[in-house]
Image 1 (cartoon, rainbow, N blue to C red):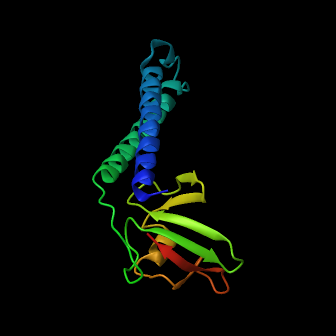
Image 2 (image 1 turned 180 degrees about the vertical axis):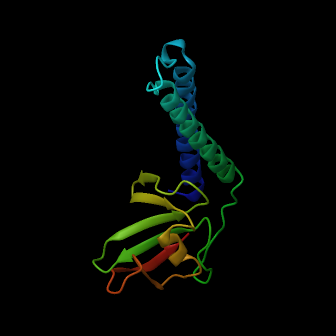
Length: 160
């Protein structure tokens, strides 16, 4: 999968998530303000709980809007053997057991996964533990999977 296609897939996934969370926020707001949710006594917190849910959904929708904007304005960079890893790198890692892992270093949306003919690509951010460790490294460098002694390491095979 090319980085352009990956970015398009990320934008599509974020757009779909935004629609879901926006609709959920509206539904929760409607429930919070519905006349049947008005408290019958001081112990009835249905409307209050619905308002908390509505606020949480609205906050998540706003986070997704920010992520969408960051990917819309993202300039995909080209990498070669001498270019240090930074934002927009598509990195192929090989574990000590020979397993391969591909990660895309994006500005937002860490944890999203996309499959193609070569396997799975996981979006990570520079703020994630692996993202922090990858920044500045190059092809051939080793990176520990986690910050602990004896942790498995990965070798950087390719950076696109």
